Amino acid sequence: MLRAYVELARPFTLIAPALGFFSGALTAIGAHPREVFSPGLLVPPILGAIMAMVFNAGSNALNQIYDLEIDRVNKGRRPLPSGRLSIAQAWSFTAIMYALTLVLAWLVAPGGRHECFWIVLVAVVCTYVYSVPPLRTKQYGIWANITIAVPRGVLLKVAGWSAVKTVFGVEPWFIGSIFGLFLLGASTTKDFADMEGDRRGGCRTLPILYGVKRAAWMISPSFVLPFLLINVGTAAGILTGHAMLLHALGAIMTAYGLYVCYLMLKRPEDLAVEENHVSWAHMYRMMFVAQIGFAAAYLL
Image 1 (cartoon, rainbow, N blue to C red):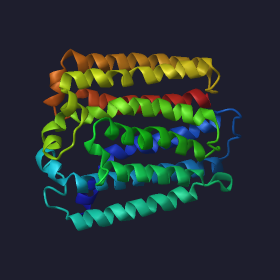
Image 2: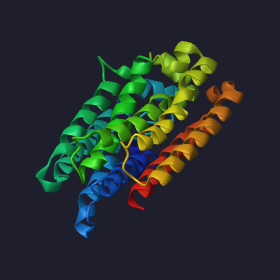
Image 3: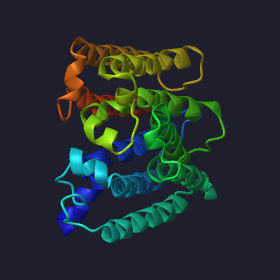
Image 4: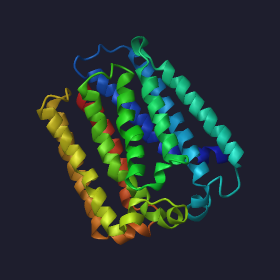
């Protein structure tokens, strides 16, 4: 039973939000004006990273509840379609995870500021809107991508920043926008191999709406253009980390993105036949590299 709940949470996907939150906090520590380091400074970021993992576990469970018929086709070994967990058990898990998320977010309050809580509350609404009818934006092409990119890209980074500094400023939102624009297209990499189940479940993803080849071309700019903003933001003085390291990060991520585009576009038909196309794995790797790169550029 415990193993089924762990699978419901999809543990591999919990690493990225935890790293994203913690990286956002480390970036805020090094941002101008630089914080004086003390062990206590890391308490809210660590608490927030745990919160991000719990939140993502709840979001994953909620999505699987409403994707049951789709998962019967695409991912029949998951806990719900395989019958190892009931819908009621999945709802209990989801409710506990979301409640714990909001409690932990409230506790991330440096200087008594509860900015993290309100940001996370908006993100919770986004995940609900993404999965649950009647809105269920997962069914509506680009709206699915938007309701993934906003909470998992933009708001995650800003929430991490809020664990150290106030979010009332351009810099945290500029950084969040870079990750949001990346996920706006990159999140589609998971949709190509799921087309049969998504079609039966009424989810009109980009590959279903426009075909595999055209959808691959449509999402390609998200692997490149957002990372050019690192160089633009550095040159404009918006990003206050180490300028040379930020320019290097922008160049590395842009080159990495071009490589992933090459992998996708040389044989786009493979996206729809391979269960986890290499571009999907590279999406996560790009997130990890960018998260670590931002933290390093601000702390060194």
